[in-house]
Length: 213
Image (cartoon, rainbow, N blue to C red; front, top):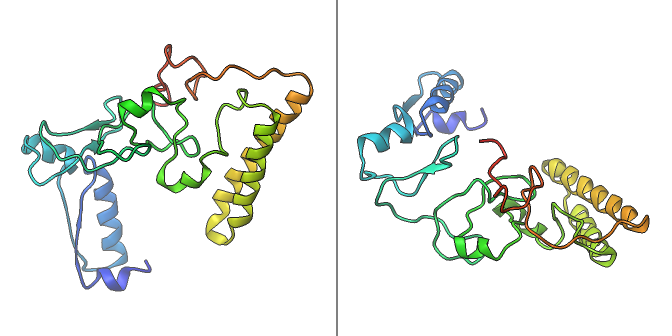
């Protein structure tokens, strides 16, 4: 609604995966801005790629909500970079998600092969080194360092727009503190191995793709 005066003076063009969200969004814009000039791509990018098999003007991959994860024309430009090594990469995988928010993260095969699967999206890059899903591989000093770093992030997360971030950090601090208590009570430090963060099985048994598809 706050952008209504701007939209009233412009031609609004929308596109989405399959056209459904555009139907809702365009109807909302017309409701908020009576008489708005709104157009949408019928059938979304999915239908567009069926019509133009070479990709037409579309570049990159189209995210889809099933086990395919993303679809793309046979010939397409790579528009993304690996989050770990920054090499050009554009192939998403359902097993490579942000350890904080579970958003898909663009990671190349080479980096994934040598990783424990602890990745971070662009919004949570500053959580690297202090936020982990599986804590049983860390000893007490390492966990204490994580708690200290998380508390610094918490102190920096000020303002009304940072409420969710503060809640996320507080919850992780609680998880770390519970693990420290477990170590004090005799829990053992586990061997570092890659596991599915959803079901906990070894990565060989479940490569992280049981999270929803």
